[in-house]
Amino acid sequence: MDNGYLLYIRIPITSIQESVKISNRFLYLMAGFAILLAAIIVSYVSRKFTDPILELNAIAKKMANLDFSHKYKLTGADDEINNLGKSINLMSDKLERTIKQLRSTNIELEKDIEEKSKIDEMRKSFISDVSHELKTPIALIQGYSEGLLENVNSDEENRKFYAEVILDETNKMDKLVKQLLELMKLEYGKREFNDTEFNIVELEKEVIRKSKVMLEEKNIEVEFETKKQINVTADDFYIEQVISNYITNAIKHVKEIDGKKVIRITNKINKKDNKVRISIFNTGDNIAEENINRIWNRFYKIDESRNRNEGGTGIGLSFVKAVMNNYGNDYGVINKEDGVEFYFEL
Image (cartoon, rainbow, N blue to C red; front, side):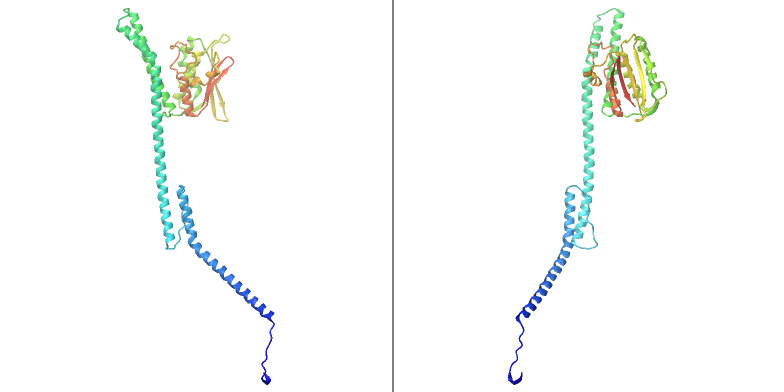
């Protein structure tokens, strides 16, 4: 500053503006970075609180839907959230045990109700069937008893005949009631099978031997297509009844074809399914298509005009159906060209 003059240095205004812009940018950048950092910190801190709450909320929703498979993952922290998680897990375990007990109790209750319903249905069916089927024999016994009491027939031979009719009808009623009870037990799953291994061919021969008198009376020829030993596993008592019912049915309906009355027994082995099909054929008339399914019903008779002494109790084929259904095996009837074939599998 010579000679008392003040020296001014001129700086371009554009340079100042540029410096301000740079400063502002730096400040904005720093502010943005600070805000971002703060947001990250806030988010991290908030998630430490919100994530456990969201997890507990999800677990509670699943518990509301009776899903107790998810549990809160506990930490070592001694805070409210961790304590709440412990309580939720404890409540979940207790609820799960309670629900399981309720379900188990409910299943048992349903079984008891179903059992009671089955027994009640069985009782009603039994009473209905017995009362219907015993009307005829009871009426006969009553009639012949009154005849004896009133001494209608003083002849000794006639009195003996009356007494024999009464005894015969009484035996038939006893047989019917016993068979019907057995059938009911089979149909309602109240009978346990004592399964053993035995030769089915020998059992068939034994049934034929027992039926020899009836076969000879009707001059029926019995043919065995399989004579070799075939072992099966089942309850031989019930299977004997099945075969006996089929044989009795065949004897009852056999008719002469080409000058012969024939009952043919066949045992066909199915190695693929490990089963044997037992078939009993008799020469005679075919069964009408509308009766194919009905014949397995209790007391169903194709020919109502038949004399009651010619038939059995009317539950033979129903017995076969019940036994086979218990075993889950196939059974049925097939019309052949010259007769009818009944079958079942073991």
